[in-house]
Image 1: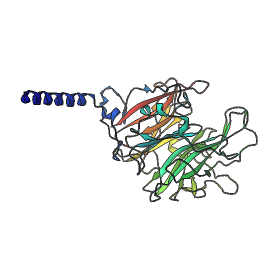
Image 2: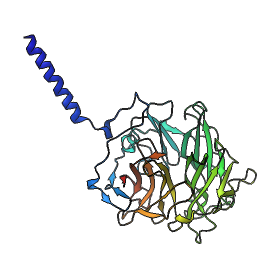
Image 3: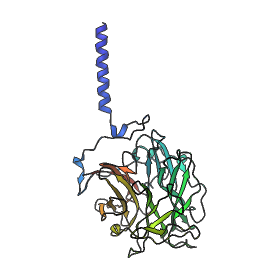
Image 4: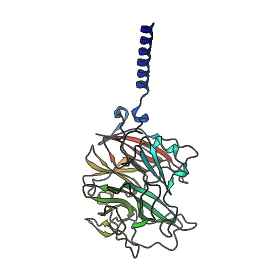
Length: 386
């Protein structure tokens, strides 16, 4: 009898192990709650992907957003930060809209597995708006842990000032800091601003003034912060806002330390502390063919290059890459209007380790099919580089 019981127990154990192996999906069910190692997933089979010159691209898939989720119908609307801080076992995600929401207990970096846990209780930054600066909203465009600062965070944010009854906005970029792992933030300071002061009255249309809609990353090689932003550029040859950049060599990216790109180097003033105005904006020459905004920039360890995507004003998604984060290749279309007849906007690149670094395979989240009221669909495509 004992032999029969032992055999039956062994068979049950093998059956259980086999069942567990059949159900295991590392891409979707990996639990890193007790580990600080980078999230890992199995490499995609690209046989069903569409092939392009430099990459393979999956079909679009749409992400369901439940009715009770804050700002349902308006994701994505700006830059998303996905990061695993040194003290954390899980990912933190900073969702950006007219405010920012922070999730700090995410098992995976992928938005589809986290968005339906968002709550109004997750809102951070922006409780005390500053007149003519953040009274129209502020939201993060890059949140980073400061090295050697015992958990101190720097949060760079897009800021808007609005006029009652008008849809136009005066935009700028600011910085704030947190000493409690992102729960509370200092009052923000402006770091980048436009060449003209905020008008007393906004336009009757949706015209933008100033600059913004950017992405800020840390460039280890240059030992500096780089902001890629959208502004009205002196060398554009058109009224369209284009992608420009600015740099700060200060370890914390403080106000008063930023210099704008002048076409050859970073010399133009970012924001004067007395006047509140900045120097001229210069478009990145290689990107001028496709005026647009809302860039997402990350370093790709497979390509050993910086990569950037942004949306053009005709709602296509544009791609460029760079060896040093300063000199960019000629921009090309990644998602065309043929591929997305309803338009594609607000692209965000995210890899297995977060939004600042990726490898051979990453995901690009973006908004599609935006209607006249701004209602949109949150979609995603997987990218596999050759």
